[in-house]
Image (cartoon, rainbow, N blue to C red):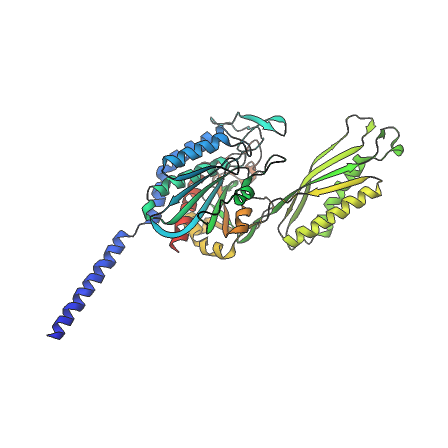
Length: 438
């Protein structure tokens, strides 16, 4: 009798376990299929949003209408929204129906003082004020697509929030291109104001569309993927005199020219370029008001790009020596100032290794590439200083175009194939869910 009871108990237990496993299997949400389907269904909306932002761009720390439209969208989805973060930033919090980590997703919102030359129906005709001057404004770096893609991911995930094993924090960031002089902003100010807290963000993902990478491709790199960026200024003081009698004065223009040449030899002759790349570029040179007057002052301004912290500090030291000694040799005085700038955009190696299979699945193994670091810079690096982060590039170039014919970023002819946004939407959504599931 005991054997019969035991046998029946075992049979019933097996049936119960089998039914439980089957029920669990049937209730397992197919995230990949859902994300793929929703990416296609939402694409028309994403394109519409992108074209609106492209037609009505706004400069750094002035993204008022952009932020308002983003906030309205998130609020319409029932997402908890905070506005005026770091001036014009918008943060949305989507709490999933299951416990899990907090994943941050970031999109930058600002445009550039560039006049658009691309012949498209939604081309920008916007004008704004930049450093006291009226300037044309254009999304010449693709931030309009970043906003639209993240809005698409928000709409996709909110529809199945009960299935989400964690919390998603949508970070729409102003002023990635840099704030106007004298203002704070961007990722650095967002971090300072606590964007990675309440709830505490565990990891953050960000992307950048690229006009010279074919649609459907993804490029990433563990470790440093983009350079640290530092702005520098040099004030040169000479002695004014008649242009016909230079020996009676001290020429700050010639001094400035010698300093520019001297700065270039720091990189070409005193920097270990086999270790990492480095760049010193002088982009502004101002002096004088008349052809026959040697002025009293000259001004230089430029950018420094480095991929190694020790190299950066050594570069700064050599720049001070070069500037001051060249000026002294000419009988002039020169003062070099270097701002704190952006740190290296550094992809956490463990996080990158963990999420690389997701990127490969989204784009396909043959269209996912580990690339060398580039000397462009990104203030996404301020998020990565606090928590592990992964930053990657997606293609925005028409597949049949030669990359050498594609206009680079920050130029009037900058152009993107909107099909590339599908890769970005799928990548951000899959990275979020895969990280939570792991």
